[in-house]
Length: 80
Length: 512
Image (cartoon, rainbow over all chains, first blue to last red; front, top):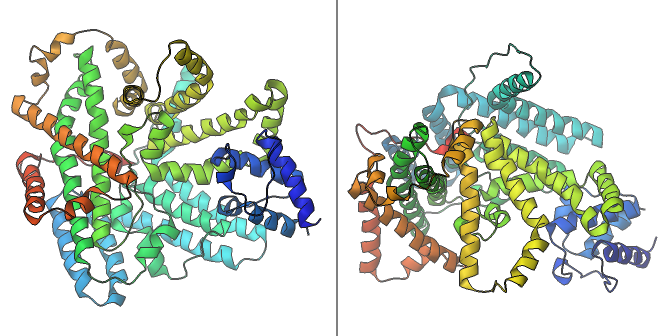
């Protein structure tokens, strides 16, 4: 899967979790850019991403991700 | 050796002097030795033994986790150390909880279970240091920090005496920065530390101990008192608990600061909170953070709760359904927070489940409140509304602390029931002066609470500006500054509850 394909899937997950069809994420997207993205929604989002890609994030990764780019990096590494 | 004893002050004065005299390489060993001495004088050799088991087991397990190849092997070390430490904690603190709960359950099914309580006294601060070392262990397993290879350095973290008996529950990556850093004598840092210790003494000896007299009178003989006596004692206990716990934190953080070590803050003017969830982000912050990061989030990430969420979404719709696993996680979280405080139902309800009801109830009823506020045309963006929200939060928290302070769950219920009697005249006929404090002592208590309120308002304002009261005071003229320092010192000496013939009670959270 290419990085672009990962972002396409991530867009779908973000739109579904935050119930907002206008969301488009990129490498630099952070919680500050999406209104409802608080710590609880972050966990919901992580669970949804895990299920979408069939992977598992460690709790260290969950709390350490700084932006969507880092999330995509981990996904690409896991699905190799 | 309590923080407020003369021997502790002597111990700290000697340590502080020695700490900055000895060469840099001797400071960490000195800190470990001082911590062991503190343990010995606080709770005897048994605290040292318990602490040694906890420290050595987590130190070895963390290193072995890093060295072991494969997830199964790493998990074996992680869960082995978790089991050992939580096992010791459970035996020391919760064995009798199972006995009493077994008896209650037996009674419900008309079975007379022959279960005798065990006479085990838990070592001081076991819940604090156990959670701290387990946090470190989990951090190493998650890869958020490296295992500490030096036993001396690790022991300095696990046994650091200011945090031992009342917390805060420090995170290894945060405290390690200053704990292991080179330290030079810094006049400002040491004097700031001493000022904070003095403020902690003021809270404990002038306010908390004074309020304890009123609280103990009413709670100790609750059959005699009813109505507003109980409500008055409940409010007094809320302030007593705050000044006792945050006073202990001020002393612990002040001692630590004077030694050049930055520990985590545990309070952030909690009575300015406008909701219960905000209150718990500002009260006992390190426990809340621990529970969130090591229990609540991992729980929400489990497959079981994800499946519950799927089913709930189908049944209740997407928006409501996704809240269900969060609420289930919160139920476990609050039960554990209550249980952490003690193995009895008054703690589980008063410091745990009741707050779950407040927070979840508030969220579920939010649309109703919103409509009601719209219907009544309530302005929610003004001081009076914010004040109402703060008073509402204070009232709800105070009800929770009735369970916390009462000798049992049943006692708390009967006290709350008896509090409904409107004997308002006790505030005018001098009845309150018969609760153990005479009029002058009462006035001192009220004035001291006034000082606390003034400082808290200042802290709240300065916090948003990124500074603090001590920094602001340091910027004042010399005369004014020293008048303030002496006023605080003499207030403690003149109005504090201490000295021969009076034994200041231990800090409330020291028992946890």
